[in-house]
Length: 125
Image (tube, rainbow, N blue to C red; front, side):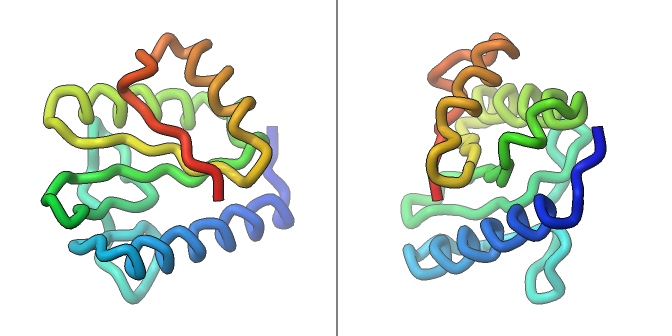
């Protein structure tokens, strides 16, 4: 399956909005893949997260920005499993961020991957 440019642009716009919201909310040590203004996140389970940051309490968050079109990609499944596992082992929080109205797609995908419900949060943006 090929993700067309319009979908990639929508995903990038969503990532931009997430970065802005995290900065406004006081997250620190923000790292973002593909952004000149931020360092790239460290690999987690062999995969580079879209965004990592620490909240005011010092808890590390791993953010994946995904639209429903990406759920068919095996790479996305592998990444999500690795990030959820890391979160459980390292007391970090894994968050999947989807466009408004796509929480159901994300929830079903996560359930299909047999990722425990308490290993991932879904945020709509």
